[in-house]
Length: 163
Image (cartoon, rainbow, N blue to C red; front, side, top):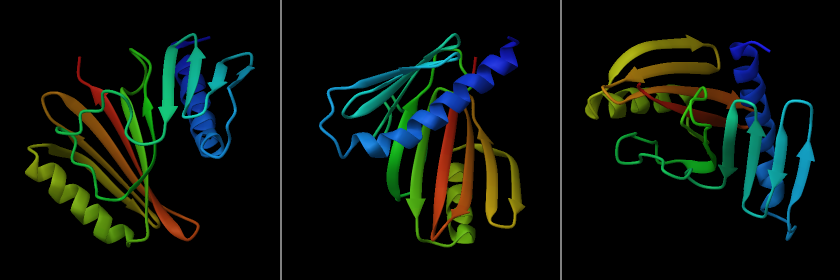
């Protein structure tokens, strides 16, 4: 399996596991482990761990372990889940939030917040109900996607350490 295929396998497993975190909040399960061809997914009461040949990622409620909240300007919106990425994986941390605010307002606030924090805007694309931003500074590359999902808006931050 090529590196990009393994990276996609880890990313797909993380997305699947992140969708399971809502289930873990409701139950008193002692834990469940599911093993597939590409990944081992362990669901505990408050977190999901995904292990692949690319490494291990942990998904939980709230901000992920070690998230540099003083360095990454997050919107003041509801955090759905956070992911601590695998070492050397496609990202170090991910945060998913929801909002009822308009995409344009959220996009403007994200751009202003990253500018005020000393980031350079690398790219921004507006595609209908999706707004995609990339920011960079000496330490991090950050991608922010803001998208209409059903009745609300989902905001996803992907943070990568610079080598």
